[in-house]
Image (tube, rainbow, N blue to C red; front, side):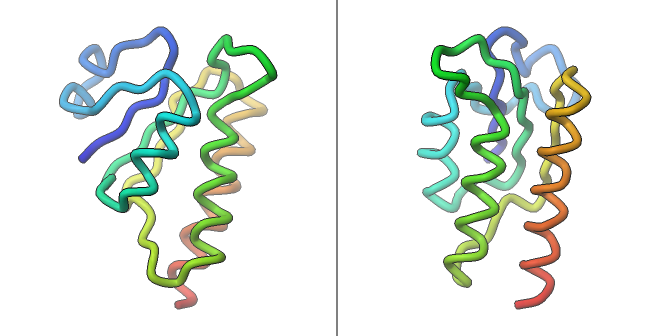
Length: 105
């Protein structure tokens, strides 16, 4: 299952993501990821939510989960579609750490 986190952009507008489940909060994304059924993940960062909740929170949660639970498999496709260049770098750094940890198992 594909998962798309964005507050505005519909995944149906993006090639290869049109069949993704669309969520708008980090909490919803984490709930789906926690099932272990997500194969593809794409994150926006700036979600317009109070308390500075953003897409990077999801990447951090995923990185922690992969390090804490050797049985948990992250999505095989990890994407960042945020237009925020600093947030993209942070999300992609988390993705690199996730891939490295999985490879080390």
